[in-house]
Image (cartoon, rainbow, N blue to C red; front, side):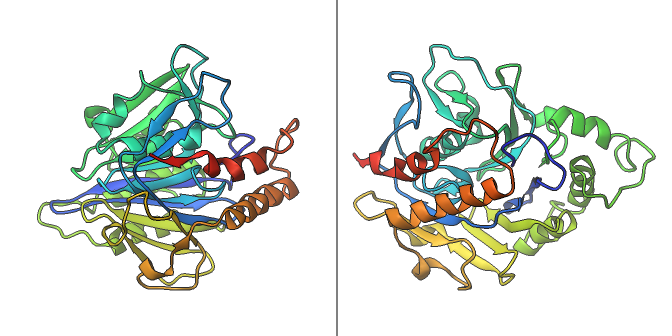
Length: 346
């Protein structure tokens, strides 16, 4: 994910493996900033889309609880899984979001939270286009979506339209930073996919796509038991020097396994261990915690001050790296940090 366009080295890779008894989704976050929090988000919370003109923002009530990985503060996730087993993950990629129309709008990170709050299946996500319009806040993104039954899709925004690649249009369940059709055309030049080229170990998005797709061929075979290590093996093959965290979701069992650049010990978040009622506080945990293995007791009640420190730290580091574009709105970080205070238990 980047704020100023596709930049070599500021990249991500994600994939889905569907086995006989398990569905795994893996994702590397490759990015110069490693700060982040894992949030436990509650059902029954009423939300109004952030920073949209009066009367144009989407309003919704969370139907499902979720666990998300966030860098820009609570309610602005980079990805996560809900209690129904739906996973949505973002990656930097080509995007042309819709122009304003009659649909209520929400930004690209809240689009992820809205899907996790509202839907249980990929089918429901793909049917949500007429209900809400995505509007750019920070980044051009595309998305990998999967559900507990093993259905998966790539969602991109092309010429102002939501385009989904699924079933026969999704020959491999991999996504990096090139548009999906371009990645598939390049893949077909390689051995095992109709061409003669050998698989490269290069760091480029298109090469990581081919490498992950090639490794997927060895998994998800009939009778094969999928384990989190299978997902991490693929993530290791596409890891970069700036990979900040690696996540493997087990969608059927509602388990999240992850490790970070500075803490390689595997960590586990079990969604079944949480009370997702909004009568109890939202929870948070620094993603780079040194604790492990099972993190249930490590989560603490949400604190507005900690959320603000996270957002200010991330924006400050991006500014120091020159990643914030000219004309950046004054006070945006503070408004994003304060946004959760506008959300209310129904």
